[in-house]
Amino acid sequence: MLDNTFDLIIIGGGAGAFASAIKANELKAKTLLVNQGLPLGGTCVNVGCVPSKTLLWAGEVMHLARNHNIPGIDIEVKNFDFAQVVQHELDLVTKLREEKYEKVLSRLENVIHAEGKAQFVSPNEIKVNGQEYQAKKFIIAAGSTATVPPIEKIQEVGYLTHIEALRIKKQPKELIVVGAGPLGLEFAQMYARFGAKVTILQRNVSIFPPAEKELTDRLAEILTKEGITIKTNVQVKSARKEGSKKVLTCMIGDKQEEVSANEILLATGKTPNTQGLSLDKAGVEVDEKQAIKVNPNFQTSQSHIYAVGDISNGPLRLEPTAGREGTLAAENALKNTQNSIDYNSIPWTIFTDPQLAGVGFTEEQQMEKFGTCMCKTVSFKDVPKALILNRTEGLIKMAIHPETKQIMGIHILAPNAGELIAEAMMLIKNKDTIDDVINSLPMFPTLSESIKIAALSFTTDISKLSCCV
Image 1 (tube, helix red, strand yellow):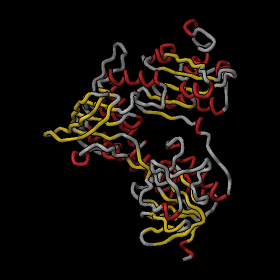
Image 2 (cartoon, rainbow, N blue to C red):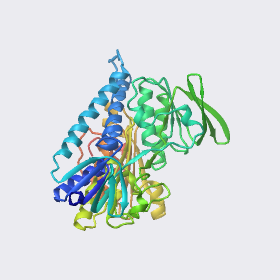
Image 3 (tube, rainbow, N blue to C red):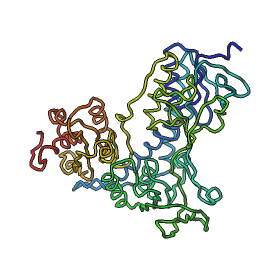
Image 4 (tube, one colour):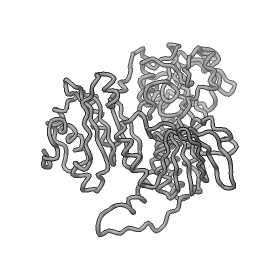
């Protein structure tokens, strides 16, 4: 029985679990990592960031070839083999899973890997494949699964989740995307650029409610111009088959409509994988969304059991947050530290084209906190590099503290906004003011100049400025 006793048991095999395992190995803790479901690497490398961004880039290359808007250049896309593009994506997934997860795990001398379903037997014991294991501390990092909304007969009609949508070799000619948000918007644009007729059905009035409305409205305009139909304020009621078509019956406001396509993609969020872990036997509490309740130090209702990533009820569920939470939770568990994360300084990105990214407060949050908002929105028409690229459709919005001028939030709709938001993250993390940015010297011409131009807009008429001021 001694061999089955560990300092730490980690349940999961994705970003949070691996970060925990790496930190535990550094601390020379005897560790067991138990994984089931997705292969090692979890969502990100297998069915998330890596494969989706690979396909998004393929779609962007095709779109750019046809819509570069440079006079005197005529580029033709001679061939598009959807199955070959998908196979390239799957090959990259296999390579990265092996290099970044399987090989990494094999080199962790203090970590043992068991493949199987973990179930708690008691607060300090789990069962895997009929074998029992004990530990002083636990980290639950078992991720989440695509949510299937309560649409009548959707199971009989059939649907795709993000997992199937990244693996199918036959391109759908028509696609209904139920839900917007990061996954829905990215997949909608990707398949539209591959040639599918795409309709988005979004329950909210906004395509992404947490973001700045000015920016999401502009993104919706851009997607609509690319041929995507966006319907908001939609409640999908039922599904049925009609020949080769799948038909959804919806209420849009108080009016009933039907939308049909060859295929349906469900992008209505994810549900934490807490079912089947027998958390009740461990005394671990979950909330109404089935997420494990955690405190700022990632502890559950049982102080020796921690939870990180999608399975917890933390404020941001992102790949980088899962990894960082895993590292800090392992340190907290094994060294009794009290590490936590300032989630307000963590950026997020939706990888459409243009990308939508943000960090810190929105105008609405500023109003709630201060009763006023010092906010400015600048068009990328005022950014020289955007003019050079002929990509002036974007916007940048900055919110500052009404008294100290400290930068409280930056939100960007632009090509490579996910790269630009890294600078914004540091400005907010370091509590910089607009004066700090105005006194900086960003490279010309770059899209990152947009952050300085946004800062200047609080004190200056930017239409009267020359370059490089």
